[in-house]
Length: 552
Image 1 (spheres, rainbow, N blue to C red):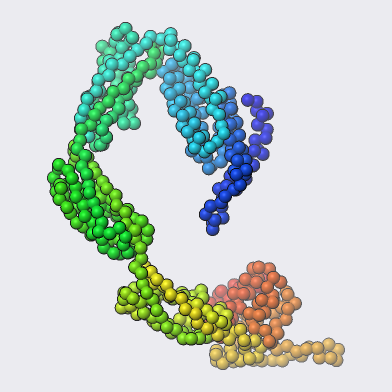
Image 2: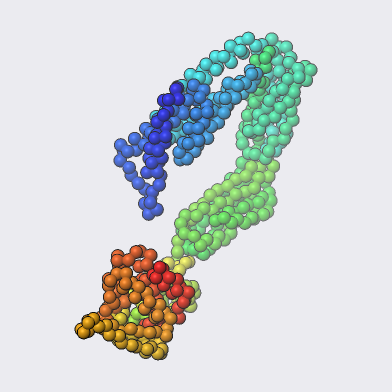
Protein backbone atom coordinates (compact mmCIF):
# COMPACT_ATOMS: atom_id res chain seq x y z
CA UNK A 1 0.00 0.00 0.00
CA UNK A 2 1.34 3.47 -0.90
CA UNK A 3 1.94 5.92 1.94
CA UNK A 4 0.01 8.63 0.12
CA UNK A 5 -3.09 6.50 0.59
CA UNK A 6 -2.94 7.45 4.28
CA UNK A 7 -2.79 11.23 3.89
CA UNK A 8 -6.25 11.44 5.48
CA UNK A 9 -5.11 9.57 8.58
CA UNK A 10 -5.06 12.65 10.91
CA UNK A 11 -8.62 13.52 9.93
CA UNK A 12 -9.63 9.89 10.36
CA UNK A 13 -8.14 9.87 13.86
CA UNK A 14 -10.03 13.04 14.80
CA UNK A 15 -13.33 11.57 13.58
CA UNK A 16 -12.58 8.31 15.34
CA UNK A 17 -11.75 10.06 18.61
CA UNK A 18 -14.98 12.05 18.53
CA UNK A 19 -16.94 8.92 17.79
CA UNK A 20 -15.35 7.00 20.63
CA UNK A 21 -15.96 9.89 23.04
CA UNK A 22 -19.59 9.99 21.99
CA UNK A 23 -20.01 6.30 22.73
CA UNK A 24 -17.93 5.83 25.87
CA UNK A 25 -18.10 9.10 27.82
CA UNK A 26 -21.57 9.29 29.34
CA UNK A 27 -22.67 11.83 31.95
CA UNK A 28 -22.44 10.42 35.46
CA UNK A 29 -26.21 10.27 36.12
CA UNK A 30 -26.84 8.38 32.85
CA UNK A 31 -26.34 4.64 33.13
CA UNK A 32 -27.03 3.75 29.53
CA UNK A 33 -27.18 5.64 26.28
CA UNK A 34 -28.92 4.44 23.14
CA UNK A 35 -27.55 5.79 19.88
CA UNK A 36 -29.54 5.53 16.67
CA UNK A 37 -28.56 2.41 14.74
CA UNK A 38 -27.30 4.46 11.81
CA UNK A 39 -24.87 6.32 14.12
CA UNK A 40 -23.59 3.07 15.63
CA UNK A 41 -23.05 1.64 12.15
CA UNK A 42 -21.10 4.73 11.08
CA UNK A 43 -18.84 4.54 14.14
CA UNK A 44 -18.28 0.81 13.55
CA UNK A 45 -17.40 1.46 9.94
CA UNK A 46 -14.85 4.16 10.90
CA UNK A 47 -13.15 1.82 13.38
CA UNK A 48 -13.24 -1.06 10.88
CA UNK A 49 -11.70 1.09 8.16
CA UNK A 50 -8.92 2.18 10.49
CA UNK A 51 -7.94 -1.34 11.46
CA UNK A 52 -8.21 -2.51 7.85
CA UNK A 53 -5.48 0.05 7.04
CA UNK A 54 -3.36 -1.52 9.79
CA UNK A 55 -3.87 -5.04 8.40
CA UNK A 56 -3.09 -3.93 4.86
CA UNK A 57 0.16 -2.25 5.92
CA UNK A 58 1.24 -5.38 7.81
CA UNK A 59 0.53 -7.54 4.77
CA UNK A 60 2.90 -5.44 2.60
CA UNK A 61 5.54 -5.50 5.37
CA UNK A 62 5.12 -1.77 6.12
CA UNK A 63 5.65 -2.52 9.81
CA UNK A 64 6.76 0.91 11.03
CA UNK A 65 3.59 2.63 9.81
CA UNK A 66 1.46 -0.24 11.13
CA UNK A 67 3.06 0.08 14.58
CA UNK A 68 2.49 3.84 14.54
CA UNK A 69 -1.19 3.36 13.71
CA UNK A 70 -1.63 0.75 16.45
CA UNK A 71 -0.01 3.16 18.94
CA UNK A 72 -2.57 5.83 18.00
CA UNK A 73 -5.54 3.46 18.02
CA UNK A 74 -8.35 3.98 20.57
CA UNK A 75 -7.58 2.67 24.06
CA UNK A 76 -11.04 1.07 24.15
CA UNK A 77 -9.58 -1.60 21.84
CA UNK A 78 -6.51 -2.29 24.00
CA UNK A 79 -6.90 -6.07 23.71
CA UNK A 80 -6.95 -5.83 19.92
CA UNK A 81 -4.00 -3.44 19.90
CA UNK A 82 -1.90 -5.75 22.11
CA UNK A 83 -2.44 -8.70 19.78
CA UNK A 84 -1.55 -6.55 16.75
CA UNK A 85 1.70 -5.47 18.44
CA UNK A 86 2.64 -9.11 19.10
CA UNK A 87 1.67 -10.14 15.56
CA UNK A 88 3.88 -7.47 14.01
CA UNK A 89 6.87 -8.40 16.19
CA UNK A 90 6.51 -12.12 15.42
CA UNK A 91 6.19 -11.44 11.70
CA UNK A 92 9.32 -9.24 11.70
CA UNK A 93 11.25 -11.97 13.54
CA UNK A 94 9.90 -14.60 11.15
CA UNK A 95 11.00 -12.68 8.07
CA UNK A 96 14.41 -11.88 9.58
CA UNK A 97 15.16 -15.44 10.76
CA UNK A 98 17.94 -17.28 8.98
CA UNK A 99 17.65 -20.76 10.50
CA UNK A 100 14.76 -23.01 9.62
CA UNK A 101 14.17 -23.81 13.29
CA UNK A 102 13.68 -20.13 14.15
CA UNK A 103 11.38 -19.69 11.17
CA UNK A 104 9.21 -22.58 12.31
CA UNK A 105 9.04 -21.20 15.86
CA UNK A 106 8.05 -17.70 14.80
CA UNK A 107 5.65 -19.08 12.20
CA UNK A 108 3.91 -20.96 14.99
CA UNK A 109 3.73 -17.83 17.23
CA UNK A 110 2.45 -15.73 14.30
CA UNK A 111 -0.34 -18.24 13.68
CA UNK A 112 -1.32 -18.12 17.35
CA UNK A 113 -1.52 -14.31 17.26
CA UNK A 114 -3.49 -14.39 14.02
CA UNK A 115 -6.03 -16.76 15.60
CA UNK A 116 -6.41 -14.41 18.60
CA UNK A 117 -6.80 -11.45 16.22
CA UNK A 118 -9.58 -13.22 14.33
CA UNK A 119 -11.50 -13.87 17.58
CA UNK A 120 -11.15 -10.26 18.76
CA UNK A 121 -12.34 -8.83 15.45
CA UNK A 122 -15.44 -10.99 15.73
CA UNK A 123 -15.86 -9.99 19.39
CA UNK A 124 -15.79 -6.26 18.52
CA UNK A 125 -18.04 -6.87 15.46
CA UNK A 126 -15.57 -5.14 13.13
CA UNK A 127 -15.85 -5.42 9.36
CA UNK A 128 -12.20 -6.32 8.80
CA UNK A 129 -10.80 -9.01 6.49
CA UNK A 130 -7.60 -10.86 7.34
CA UNK A 131 -7.18 -12.23 3.82
CA UNK A 132 -4.06 -10.11 3.12
CA UNK A 133 -2.34 -11.59 6.17
CA UNK A 134 -3.33 -15.13 5.26
CA UNK A 135 -1.86 -14.54 1.80
CA UNK A 136 1.42 -13.35 3.32
CA UNK A 137 1.62 -16.31 5.71
CA UNK A 138 0.80 -18.74 2.93
CA UNK A 139 3.70 -17.37 0.91
CA UNK A 140 6.02 -17.73 3.91
CA UNK A 141 4.74 -21.25 4.57
CA UNK A 142 5.47 -22.29 1.00
CA UNK A 143 9.03 -21.06 1.43
CA UNK A 144 9.44 -22.96 4.72
CA UNK A 145 7.94 -26.11 3.17
CA UNK A 146 10.33 -25.91 0.24
CA UNK A 147 13.23 -25.65 2.67
CA UNK A 148 11.89 -28.55 4.73
CA UNK A 149 11.39 -30.70 1.62
CA UNK A 150 15.10 -30.59 1.09
CA UNK A 151 15.78 -31.62 4.71
CA UNK A 152 15.99 -35.08 6.21
CA UNK A 153 12.73 -36.04 7.94
CA UNK A 154 12.82 -36.79 11.66
CA UNK A 155 10.59 -38.37 14.25
CA UNK A 156 10.42 -38.52 18.06
CA UNK A 157 9.61 -41.71 19.92
CA UNK A 158 8.06 -40.59 23.23
CA UNK A 159 7.38 -42.60 26.41
CA UNK A 160 5.90 -41.13 29.63
CA UNK A 161 4.79 -42.54 32.97
CA UNK A 162 1.27 -43.68 32.22
CA UNK A 163 -0.33 -42.66 35.52
CA UNK A 164 0.55 -41.16 38.87
CA UNK A 165 -0.98 -39.11 41.67
CA UNK A 166 -1.04 -35.30 42.11
CA UNK A 167 2.43 -34.24 43.21
CA UNK A 168 3.91 -37.53 41.99
CA UNK A 169 7.04 -38.16 39.92
CA UNK A 170 7.00 -38.92 36.20
CA UNK A 171 9.66 -39.96 33.71
CA UNK A 172 9.67 -38.64 30.16
CA UNK A 173 11.95 -40.51 27.79
CA UNK A 174 12.35 -41.15 24.12
CA UNK A 175 14.54 -41.12 21.03
CA UNK A 176 15.18 -38.62 18.24
CA UNK A 177 15.55 -40.47 14.93
CA UNK A 178 15.65 -39.82 11.22
CA UNK A 179 12.82 -41.20 9.09
CA UNK A 180 14.81 -44.39 8.45
CA UNK A 181 15.60 -44.96 12.14
CA UNK A 182 19.05 -43.40 12.38
CA UNK A 183 19.62 -41.92 15.88
CA UNK A 184 20.43 -38.19 16.11
CA UNK A 185 22.91 -37.69 18.96
CA UNK A 186 23.57 -34.44 20.84
CA UNK A 187 20.53 -32.51 19.60
CA UNK A 188 18.11 -30.55 21.80
CA UNK A 189 14.59 -31.85 22.32
CA UNK A 190 12.06 -29.52 23.97
CA UNK A 191 9.38 -30.77 26.38
CA UNK A 192 6.25 -28.75 27.24
CA UNK A 193 4.16 -29.66 30.28
CA UNK A 194 1.54 -27.57 32.14
CA UNK A 195 2.56 -24.37 30.32
CA UNK A 196 6.22 -24.87 31.19
CA UNK A 197 9.04 -25.71 28.80
CA UNK A 198 12.03 -27.93 29.50
CA UNK A 199 14.95 -28.96 27.30
CA UNK A 200 17.05 -32.12 27.20
CA UNK A 201 19.98 -33.14 24.96
CA UNK A 202 20.05 -36.54 23.31
CA UNK A 203 22.93 -38.86 24.15
CA UNK A 204 25.19 -40.69 21.74
CA UNK A 205 22.38 -43.10 20.83
CA UNK A 206 19.81 -40.31 20.27
CA UNK A 207 18.01 -41.12 23.50
CA UNK A 208 16.81 -38.59 26.11
CA UNK A 209 15.25 -38.79 29.56
CA UNK A 210 13.71 -36.20 31.90
CA UNK A 211 12.46 -36.81 35.45
CA UNK A 212 9.90 -34.31 36.82
CA UNK A 213 7.81 -33.87 39.95
CA UNK A 214 4.26 -32.79 39.19
CA UNK A 215 2.66 -29.96 41.13
CA UNK A 216 -0.20 -30.70 43.54
CA UNK A 217 -2.90 -30.28 40.92
CA UNK A 218 -6.11 -32.20 40.54
CA UNK A 219 -6.97 -32.79 36.88
CA UNK A 220 -7.63 -36.12 35.29
CA UNK A 221 -4.97 -35.98 32.58
CA UNK A 222 -1.91 -33.95 31.60
CA UNK A 223 -0.59 -33.58 28.07
CA UNK A 224 3.15 -33.86 27.40
CA UNK A 225 4.57 -32.62 24.08
CA UNK A 226 8.09 -33.22 22.77
CA UNK A 227 9.32 -31.31 19.73
CA UNK A 228 12.47 -30.85 17.72
CA UNK A 229 13.20 -27.65 15.81
CA UNK A 230 14.49 -27.84 12.25
CA UNK A 231 18.15 -27.34 11.48
CA UNK A 232 19.83 -26.76 8.15
CA UNK A 233 20.00 -30.53 7.72
CA UNK A 234 17.11 -32.11 9.61
CA UNK A 235 13.42 -31.20 9.52
CA UNK A 236 11.50 -30.50 12.70
CA UNK A 237 9.05 -32.93 14.30
CA UNK A 238 6.84 -33.28 17.36
CA UNK A 239 4.73 -35.83 19.22
CA UNK A 240 2.36 -35.88 22.22
CA UNK A 241 1.56 -38.25 25.08
CA UNK A 242 -0.72 -38.13 28.12
CA UNK A 243 -0.27 -38.77 31.83
CA UNK A 244 -3.34 -39.80 33.83
CA UNK A 245 -3.70 -38.69 37.47
CA UNK A 246 -5.35 -40.92 40.03
CA UNK A 247 -7.06 -39.30 43.01
CA UNK A 248 -10.26 -39.44 45.03
CA UNK A 249 -12.79 -36.63 44.57
CA UNK A 250 -14.72 -35.85 47.78
CA UNK A 251 -18.08 -34.08 47.94
CA UNK A 252 -19.42 -31.45 50.35
CA UNK A 253 -23.09 -31.09 51.18
CA UNK A 254 -23.99 -27.81 52.93
CA UNK A 255 -27.19 -25.96 53.84
CA UNK A 256 -28.23 -22.75 55.62
CA UNK A 257 -31.21 -22.67 57.94
CA UNK A 258 -32.51 -19.72 55.85
CA UNK A 259 -31.57 -18.04 52.59
CA UNK A 260 -32.48 -14.53 53.74
CA UNK A 261 -31.29 -12.69 56.83
CA UNK A 262 -30.75 -9.32 58.41
CA UNK A 263 -27.48 -7.47 58.91
CA UNK A 264 -25.71 -8.89 61.97
CA UNK A 265 -28.09 -11.84 62.19
CA UNK A 266 -26.59 -15.23 63.06
CA UNK A 267 -27.43 -18.13 60.74
CA UNK A 268 -26.83 -21.85 61.24
CA UNK A 269 -24.66 -23.51 58.59
CA UNK A 270 -24.69 -27.32 58.39
CA UNK A 271 -22.20 -29.25 56.29
CA UNK A 272 -21.07 -32.83 55.71
CA UNK A 273 -17.88 -33.97 53.95
CA UNK A 274 -18.25 -37.21 52.02
CA UNK A 275 -14.72 -38.61 51.67
CA UNK A 276 -12.52 -41.60 52.52
CA UNK A 277 -9.96 -39.61 54.52
CA UNK A 278 -9.94 -38.66 58.20
CA UNK A 279 -8.84 -35.54 60.05
CA UNK A 280 -9.90 -33.27 57.19
CA UNK A 281 -9.71 -29.46 57.22
CA UNK A 282 -12.67 -27.29 56.21
CA UNK A 283 -12.32 -23.59 55.35
CA UNK A 284 -15.46 -21.42 55.40
CA UNK A 285 -15.09 -18.14 53.49
CA UNK A 286 -17.60 -15.34 53.75
CA UNK A 287 -17.34 -11.67 52.79
CA UNK A 288 -13.53 -11.23 52.69
CA UNK A 289 -13.01 -13.30 55.82
CA UNK A 290 -12.54 -16.98 56.53
CA UNK A 291 -12.11 -19.41 59.39
CA UNK A 292 -10.86 -22.98 59.58
CA UNK A 293 -12.35 -26.08 61.17
CA UNK A 294 -9.86 -28.94 61.69
CA UNK A 295 -10.20 -32.65 62.44
CA UNK A 296 -13.37 -32.96 60.43
CA UNK A 297 -14.43 -36.60 60.17
CA UNK A 298 -16.02 -37.99 57.00
CA UNK A 299 -19.76 -38.47 56.65
CA UNK A 300 -20.55 -36.57 59.85
CA UNK A 301 -22.86 -33.53 59.94
CA UNK A 302 -21.30 -30.44 61.50
CA UNK A 303 -22.98 -27.16 62.48
CA UNK A 304 -21.46 -23.72 62.79
CA UNK A 305 -22.76 -20.15 63.14
CA UNK A 306 -22.40 -17.49 60.42
CA UNK A 307 -22.80 -13.80 61.35
CA UNK A 308 -24.13 -11.80 58.41
CA UNK A 309 -21.99 -8.77 57.43
CA UNK A 310 -22.94 -5.10 57.49
CA UNK A 311 -23.58 -5.17 53.74
CA UNK A 312 -26.89 -5.76 52.02
CA UNK A 313 -27.56 -7.82 48.90
CA UNK A 314 -26.71 -11.35 47.80
CA UNK A 315 -23.61 -12.64 49.60
CA UNK A 316 -21.71 -15.87 48.89
CA UNK A 317 -20.57 -18.42 51.45
CA UNK A 318 -17.98 -20.98 50.31
CA UNK A 319 -17.35 -24.22 52.17
CA UNK A 320 -14.14 -25.92 50.98
CA UNK A 321 -12.06 -28.91 52.05
CA UNK A 322 -8.26 -28.80 51.73
CA UNK A 323 -6.47 -31.47 49.64
CA UNK A 324 -4.52 -34.33 51.22
CA UNK A 325 -2.19 -36.17 48.86
CA UNK A 326 -4.39 -38.19 46.53
CA UNK A 327 -7.54 -36.70 48.10
CA UNK A 328 -8.65 -33.76 45.97
CA UNK A 329 -10.15 -30.56 47.35
CA UNK A 330 -13.88 -29.99 47.21
CA UNK A 331 -16.06 -26.93 47.59
CA UNK A 332 -19.65 -25.79 47.52
CA UNK A 333 -21.07 -22.27 47.32
CA UNK A 334 -24.20 -20.99 49.08
CA UNK A 335 -25.89 -17.60 48.78
CA UNK A 336 -27.82 -15.56 51.31
CA UNK A 337 -29.75 -12.34 50.74
CA UNK A 338 -28.75 -9.85 53.45
CA UNK A 339 -31.27 -7.13 54.31
CA UNK A 340 -31.84 -4.59 57.10
CA UNK A 341 -34.01 -5.22 60.16
CA UNK A 342 -37.34 -3.44 59.61
CA UNK A 343 -38.13 -0.78 62.22
CA UNK A 344 -41.39 1.05 62.87
CA UNK A 345 -40.78 4.68 63.89
CA UNK A 346 -43.10 7.25 65.43
CA UNK A 347 -42.18 10.71 66.74
CA UNK A 348 -43.71 13.88 68.14
CA UNK A 349 -42.73 17.46 67.36
CA UNK A 350 -44.29 20.91 67.91
CA UNK A 351 -47.08 21.93 65.54
CA UNK A 352 -45.06 24.93 64.41
CA UNK A 353 -41.41 25.89 64.85
CA UNK A 354 -39.43 29.12 64.49
CA UNK A 355 -36.37 29.22 62.25
CA UNK A 356 -33.23 29.77 64.28
CA UNK A 357 -34.69 28.33 67.47
CA UNK A 358 -34.47 24.74 68.79
CA UNK A 359 -37.37 22.29 68.60
CA UNK A 360 -37.70 19.16 70.72
CA UNK A 361 -38.36 15.92 68.83
CA UNK A 362 -39.10 12.70 70.71
CA UNK A 363 -39.83 9.29 69.29
CA UNK A 364 -40.27 5.57 69.74
CA UNK A 365 -39.12 2.58 67.68
CA UNK A 366 -40.38 -0.97 67.61
CA UNK A 367 -38.94 -3.47 67.97
CA UNK A 368 -37.01 -1.80 70.75
CA UNK A 369 -33.28 -1.59 70.08
CA UNK A 370 -30.18 0.35 71.04
CA UNK A 371 -28.65 2.16 68.10
CA UNK A 372 -28.95 5.42 66.17
CA UNK A 373 -31.46 7.37 64.10
CA UNK A 374 -30.93 10.22 61.66
CA UNK A 375 -33.17 13.28 62.01
CA UNK A 376 -33.21 15.51 58.92
CA UNK A 377 -34.62 19.05 58.80
CA UNK A 378 -33.87 20.95 55.61
CA UNK A 379 -30.17 20.37 54.94
CA UNK A 380 -29.34 19.84 58.62
CA UNK A 381 -28.79 16.31 59.94
CA UNK A 382 -28.78 15.13 63.56
CA UNK A 383 -27.53 11.68 64.56
CA UNK A 384 -29.23 10.65 67.79
CA UNK A 385 -28.81 7.63 70.06
CA UNK A 386 -31.68 5.26 70.58
CA UNK A 387 -31.92 3.65 74.02
CA UNK A 388 -34.37 0.84 74.54
CA UNK A 389 -36.36 2.03 71.52
CA UNK A 390 -36.60 5.70 72.58
CA UNK A 391 -34.82 8.81 71.33
CA UNK A 392 -34.95 12.56 71.88
CA UNK A 393 -33.19 15.42 70.12
CA UNK A 394 -33.20 19.21 70.35
CA UNK A 395 -32.78 20.34 66.74
CA UNK A 396 -32.21 23.95 65.69
CA UNK A 397 -34.53 24.83 62.80
CA UNK A 398 -32.32 26.13 59.94
CA UNK A 399 -32.56 29.84 59.14
CA UNK A 400 -32.46 28.95 55.45
CA UNK A 401 -35.98 27.49 55.53
CA UNK A 402 -38.80 29.60 54.19
CA UNK A 403 -42.03 30.02 56.10
CA UNK A 404 -44.50 27.23 55.44
CA UNK A 405 -44.77 23.45 55.77
CA UNK A 406 -41.42 21.69 55.99
CA UNK A 407 -40.81 17.92 56.28
CA UNK A 408 -38.95 16.42 59.22
CA UNK A 409 -37.74 12.87 58.58
CA UNK A 410 -36.44 10.28 61.02
CA UNK A 411 -34.57 7.24 59.66
CA UNK A 412 -33.24 4.21 61.51
CA UNK A 413 -29.57 3.46 60.79
CA UNK A 414 -28.15 -0.01 60.02
CA UNK A 415 -28.61 -2.73 60.96
CA UNK A 416 -32.18 -1.39 61.07
CA UNK A 417 -34.16 0.21 58.28
CA UNK A 418 -37.22 2.45 58.33
CA UNK A 419 -38.16 6.09 57.74
CA UNK A 420 -41.04 8.31 58.78
CA UNK A 421 -41.73 11.84 57.55
CA UNK A 422 -43.97 14.50 59.11
CA UNK A 423 -44.60 18.10 58.17
CA UNK A 424 -44.27 21.01 60.58
CA UNK A 425 -45.06 24.65 59.97
CA UNK A 426 -41.95 26.86 59.97
CA UNK A 427 -42.11 30.55 60.83
CA UNK A 428 -39.07 32.44 59.55
CA UNK A 429 -38.96 36.07 60.77
CA UNK A 430 -36.51 36.88 58.00
CA UNK A 431 -39.38 36.60 55.55
CA UNK A 432 -41.24 39.40 57.33
CA UNK A 433 -38.72 41.68 59.01
CA UNK A 434 -37.09 44.27 56.69
CA UNK A 435 -33.44 45.25 56.87
CA UNK A 436 -34.31 48.72 58.09
CA UNK A 437 -34.52 50.12 61.59
CA UNK A 438 -36.78 47.36 63.00
CA UNK A 439 -34.43 44.62 61.81
CA UNK A 440 -31.39 46.29 63.27
CA UNK A 441 -33.16 46.97 66.54
CA UNK A 442 -33.85 43.23 66.71
CA UNK A 443 -30.17 42.69 66.17
CA UNK A 444 -29.27 45.11 68.96
CA UNK A 445 -31.68 43.43 71.36
CA UNK A 446 -30.44 39.93 70.58
CA UNK A 447 -26.75 40.76 70.52
CA UNK A 448 -26.75 43.30 73.40
CA UNK A 449 -24.31 45.45 71.43
CA UNK A 450 -24.20 49.22 71.12
CA UNK A 451 -24.50 50.83 67.73
CA UNK A 452 -24.00 54.44 66.82
CA UNK A 453 -26.58 55.75 64.38
CA UNK A 454 -25.97 58.88 62.38
CA UNK A 455 -28.09 60.68 59.82
CA UNK A 456 -26.69 62.21 56.71
CA UNK A 457 -28.59 64.56 54.48
CA UNK A 458 -27.71 64.92 50.82
CA UNK A 459 -28.59 68.28 49.35
CA UNK A 460 -28.40 69.34 45.77
CA UNK A 461 -28.70 73.09 45.33
CA UNK A 462 -31.47 73.97 47.82
CA UNK A 463 -33.61 70.86 47.60
CA UNK A 464 -33.30 67.86 49.88
CA UNK A 465 -33.31 64.96 47.45
CA UNK A 466 -33.25 62.19 49.97
CA UNK A 467 -31.70 60.85 53.11
CA UNK A 468 -29.95 57.65 54.01
CA UNK A 469 -29.26 55.97 57.33
CA UNK A 470 -25.60 55.23 57.94
CA UNK A 471 -24.76 52.65 60.55
CA UNK A 472 -21.37 52.27 62.19
CA UNK A 473 -21.19 48.84 63.77
CA UNK A 474 -19.04 47.62 66.58
CA UNK A 475 -19.74 44.01 65.47
CA UNK A 476 -17.20 42.99 62.77
CA UNK A 477 -19.61 40.68 60.89
CA UNK A 478 -22.29 43.34 60.65
CA UNK A 479 -19.63 45.80 59.52
CA UNK A 480 -18.39 43.38 56.85
CA UNK A 481 -21.92 42.93 55.52
CA UNK A 482 -22.41 46.72 55.42
CA UNK A 483 -19.16 47.15 53.46
CA UNK A 484 -20.19 44.43 51.03
CA UNK A 485 -23.65 45.96 50.69
CA UNK A 486 -22.16 49.34 49.74
CA UNK A 487 -19.94 47.66 47.12
CA UNK A 488 -22.85 45.74 45.60
CA UNK A 489 -24.98 48.89 45.49
CA UNK A 490 -22.23 50.68 43.61
CA UNK A 491 -21.82 47.84 41.09
CA UNK A 492 -25.51 47.23 40.43
CA UNK A 493 -27.00 50.71 41.03
CA UNK A 494 -29.60 48.88 43.12
CA UNK A 495 -30.15 50.66 46.44
CA UNK A 496 -31.00 48.72 49.60
CA UNK A 497 -34.38 49.98 50.82
CA UNK A 498 -35.52 49.88 54.42
CA UNK A 499 -38.52 47.74 53.51
CA UNK A 500 -36.31 45.06 51.86
CA UNK A 501 -35.26 41.93 53.70
CA UNK A 502 -31.66 40.94 53.09
CA UNK A 503 -32.91 37.94 51.16
CA UNK A 504 -35.10 40.12 48.95
CA UNK A 505 -32.13 42.34 48.16
CA UNK A 506 -30.03 39.26 47.34
CA UNK A 507 -32.66 38.18 44.81
CA UNK A 508 -32.76 41.68 43.29
CA UNK A 509 -29.03 41.70 42.49
CA UNK A 510 -29.01 38.16 41.18
CA UNK A 511 -27.62 38.15 37.63
CA UNK A 512 -26.37 41.75 37.91
CA UNK A 513 -22.93 40.81 39.28
CA UNK A 514 -20.55 38.06 38.27
CA UNK A 515 -21.10 34.59 39.69
CA UNK A 516 -18.13 34.61 42.10
CA UNK A 517 -19.19 37.90 43.70
CA UNK A 518 -22.80 36.77 43.89
CA UNK A 519 -21.90 33.47 45.56
CA UNK A 520 -19.70 35.27 48.06
CA UNK A 521 -22.40 37.85 48.78
CA UNK A 522 -25.01 35.10 49.16
CA UNK A 523 -22.85 33.29 51.70
CA UNK A 524 -22.08 36.52 53.56
CA UNK A 525 -25.80 37.35 53.67
CA UNK A 526 -26.48 33.97 55.25
CA UNK A 527 -23.74 34.48 57.85
CA UNK A 528 -25.10 37.95 58.59
CA UNK A 529 -28.55 36.44 59.19
CA UNK A 530 -27.07 33.86 61.56
CA UNK A 531 -25.29 36.61 63.47
CA UNK A 532 -28.17 39.08 63.61
CA UNK A 533 -31.04 36.75 64.37
CA UNK A 534 -29.32 33.79 65.96
CA UNK A 535 -26.35 35.48 67.69
CA UNK A 536 -24.07 32.68 66.40
CA UNK A 537 -20.29 32.84 66.90
CA UNK A 538 -18.97 32.79 63.33
CA UNK A 539 -15.58 32.34 61.67
CA UNK A 540 -14.21 35.84 61.00
CA UNK A 541 -11.57 34.41 58.67
CA UNK A 542 -14.30 33.13 56.33
CA UNK A 543 -16.12 36.48 56.53
CA UNK A 544 -12.94 38.35 55.57
CA UNK A 545 -12.29 36.02 52.62
CA UNK A 546 -15.83 36.54 51.35
CA UNK A 547 -15.43 40.30 51.71
CA UNK A 548 -12.20 40.22 49.69
CA UNK A 549 -13.99 38.48 46.81
CA UNK A 550 -16.83 41.02 46.85
CA UNK A 551 -14.54 44.04 47.08
CA UNK A 552 -12.11 42.80 44.40
